[in-house]
Length: 272
Image 1 (tube, rainbow, N blue to C red):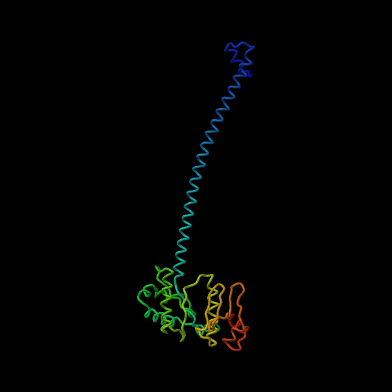
Image 2 (cartoon, one colour; image 1 turned 180 degrees about the vertical axis):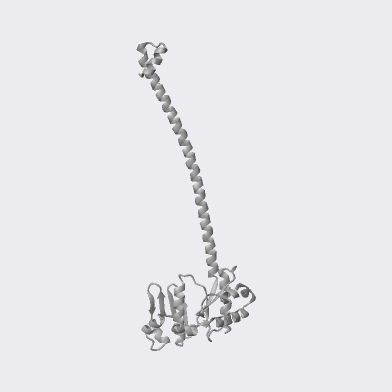
């Protein structure tokens, strides 16, 4: 029992024999009272802390949602820009010997003359889909191994197929020759398909250079790319190309089209 508590009880007239017991009881009560007060303060603090944490979490999640929405918006914009960039068609097939591409490629003046002639021949609907100025000013090249026909900004990929079909029809009628040859038209390929189209174009150009008519062969663009001799009742595979394994050529099938051809020489020409 503390001296202060003893003096207080003595002043209150508590007999000495009861002072110790009463002091212990009062000290126990005060201890409990203080403990309760501390616990209430802790509980109040916990409640405030929980509320604060909840508030911070709500604000944090709102910021996360905003960032996600902003990112998705940027992704959508990039995707739309990509789709616009992909909505063009490529006219190629007039480079029959890739080793002579600098001689066979079109100059910018020749490219512009071909584009203007082509645009003058297409129908009115297709004409509204072609961005003539962008086509004439496309790229910074001085020589063109292909012609990129750009479409208007509002065009979608389906419009590119309309343009391709129209130019294909003109080519079939002999109205869009390049270097006295009938070019072919493709919708700009995805990055994954581009190697197959490039490889197939080189191989078909090689065949044409060696006197093989386009009507006698057919390419399945894959992947993998396969080229067939379709003259007989059953097509014969001439070649196969895959980005992982490269070219696989069939000697006998090639010889039926190009007598005395050597696979090694064909492979060397394709790698030029």
